[in-house]
Every structure is written in C-alpha cells, then in structure tokens.
Length: 435
Image (cartoon, rainbow, N blue to C red):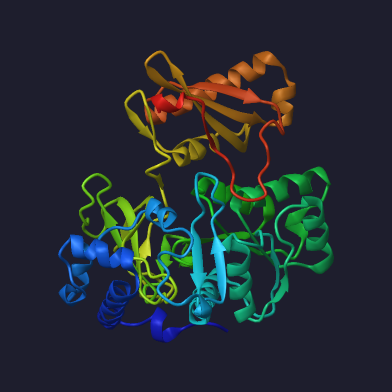
C-alpha cells in the first residue's frame, strides 16, 4: 500500500504553511545559485526576503520555454554537475531541447510523486505493469518505471512501439496495468481488433495515460474498447516529468502534488493571477527541486482550479482536465478553436474512428480549417455518396456546436499515421510569415 497520509490528507492551512517555507527556500536558492534568476529578480527589484506570503509568488518573474532553451544545457542548474545523477530532455523538435538535470534527492521526490499518482489510479503491489512509454531522454518511461518500482509492482518495460509484440506480451504475461500515451492505447486496441484479440477478456484492468492532451470523450473511447479504467498522469519535462498532477477514483479533476509544486492560474493576456475557479493559463513554481529550481513556469496549458473537496480524502488542490493550450489555439472565422473541442465532437459521431488530423490553410486573407477524420471501414467502403453524407453530418455537428464552418474530409481507415508516442493532431500549411 502507498498512501502518504501526512501530505495527501494534510489540513490545507498546514499545507500552505509548509509551501511558504519551501517557497522561501527555493527563491533564496535560485537567487544565490542561478545567475539567470538573480538577474531577473534584480531587474524587478525583488529580493528573496520580499517573499513573506504565498501570494507574494506573484512578485516573481515568469519562466518560459525559451528561457530554458537560451540557457541550454545547464545554465539554470543550481548545483555542481558532480551532484547531478541523471539528465532527461525534451525532443527538441521545435528548437534546442529542454534539459532536466536531477540530483539523487530529485529522483527520490519524483518517484514519490509517481507512486502517489499510480496508487491513486488503483495500481497495487500485486499488479503486472506493462510500461509502453519510451525509455530514454523522454521522461515518461523512467518516470512511470520509478513509480511502479516504488509500489513494488512486477514491471514489464516494453517501451513504445512493436505493437503486435505489445499485445502478445500483454496476453502471455497477464498484464493488469498499461502505461502509455492515450493515442498509443487506441493504436494497441485497434491492432488487437485486427488480430482478433479481445483485449476486454484479458486481465488488463487499469491504464495510466498522459504526455499529450486528451478529452473525456477519448477516455470513454479507451475504456470502452479496452474494458479498463483510464486514468491520467500530468507532468512536464521542465518540472521533473509525469506525476505533477493525477487522477483519483473520482476522475473529476487532477490532484496537484502541492508539497512539490506551487500552482497558479493566470490571465493568459494580462498574466495577472486569477481567483480560484476561473479558467486561465497554468503556472508552476517548483518547491523541492535541487538541480534545477523553476520559478513561475508558464505551461501554456488552460485549466481552472476546482473548489469542491474531493471524496477520495485527499486535500491536495485539484485542477480541471486541460481544455487546451494557448499555443495550440486556432482562430477560425473569429472563433477561438482548440483541437480538444474538435476531438470531443468527432467522438460523438458513430460513423468515424477516433483518428483525426486538423489541417490549417490560408484561403485568401482568412484561415481555413480542414478536418481529416477516418471513417469506419463499413462506412468508407459504402462509397462516395455515403462518405459525402457523413462529411456533411460532421461539418454540421461542428457548425451547430461551435458556430464555425469547416471542410471535412472523410479518409480511408489507416490513412492517418499511428502514433507510438505523442500524436500529431495539427498540421499548419500556412506560409510561416502569415501564421
């Protein structure tokens, strides 16, 4: 059993007192050990002694992704490299990678956060866990591995890819828990159906998914296709990896590991802190990271905090399931559109598969959105007239719910490339200078 009652059920007033103590220590350490933060704080005329209340976090400078890239690889490191025992990094597909150095204490804390996450999802010591996250510089594989090891589960480190082999091992080893991205879980379910393997009849009972945005509609799709409980893990390479926030049995918001991460929601335009319950951009300050403390990291994720107490008994603050990212938002016919909104609507159409791609093009002076979505085999094979009928149905549903007119292309099954990690949902074909 793994339940840190001291932290997870701590009275809120005591938790806030502990957070303030750790916040003061973090700011002081960043000021003394990281030249970047000393310069940023001096520019704002803020000194560590100015942090006397939790609300004073708003005095601190924001950190954005480019700050981490500009200080690549170890410019934000607060300890000598001899004290760094591991380094992870993002893919770096849009620039220099984001590096995440860890001390031994950082790894212990990360394992603790992941163990809480997995226990809350229903994972137990006697489970056989198949870890289909990629191992390597990406934090997913090792993060989930460490959490399951702390719970003393039987670990099967398959890593991502080789989908048929994943299914074979799932059967042969009797896996009861699956770790992967949600899109890869659907890829596994789809391939199992093609191989005439009934995943629902296997011992598999829980999946813990993360690393990419996914909707409640997709969660329902995974649960239905695989016959499991689909739980969520939220995290970022910049903060340590998965385990920053997690589902509990309520599946109504994600508990934040508040002893390690101080969370804010700010207005994405003015960057002013918003009252509890209002939706905005999620911001985190690390509270216990030694190797690379982070002050007010702008995640670009959109959410709100949930006021109501949770029936699971945890007093840790909950945040709503992410509704999108500020950098994923499209403006179509003057309407703000998030890919997650389109996904939810597509999954309400029985004639299509949960495999789609949003293509943004320029049509004159306006942005045009084309939704490519796979039709179910019997629907697609029924011919052009049926396909046109479904395309019209999808476009009408989106227009009716969101007030935008889009083009829909019903494509053949397997047209959209399957993902073994994060799915590519948006393809921007606009000339770069017109985006």
